[in-house]
Image (cartoon, rainbow, N blue to C red; front, side):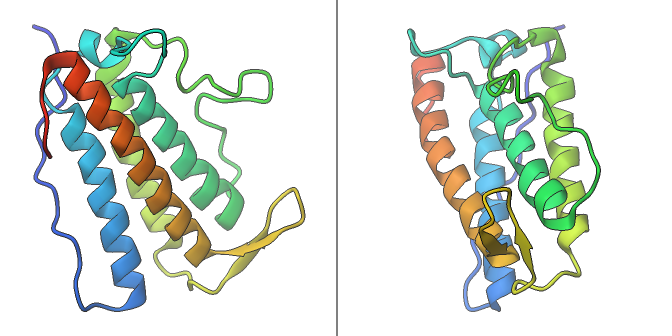
Length: 172
């Protein structure tokens, strides 16, 4: 039997809640949107570029966003000494490269696990807590939330186009 990404129930967007709940709610909504875009196609379809000559795939987006979650929340903000997912200085686009349909289910589970780890890592941290990136720029946790919402929104637009080109599905 061929694995297909499971359907999910996308959480509602937040309304009239605290700033932290608003940021978390919108991030969760966009995370769910990516998973909804990936639900249904086979592992082979998820790993296949749908709009040549672009190598962009739905599975590549899942890997890229797992990587981005880990980098921003766990490595940069919390300072956890966890290995990078996929990308290195020598292979900066590895999250989009070397996709193996046989690993699609594991990649999907790794994405979900990374989300849970990131949420746990910052659950008790304040939005105004700061950190400094390599360039010397000081950012705060609020900036990460806003950046990740933007990152998902942009890539969910890509996922819309990829999914429609793949099998005609629209919506979600």
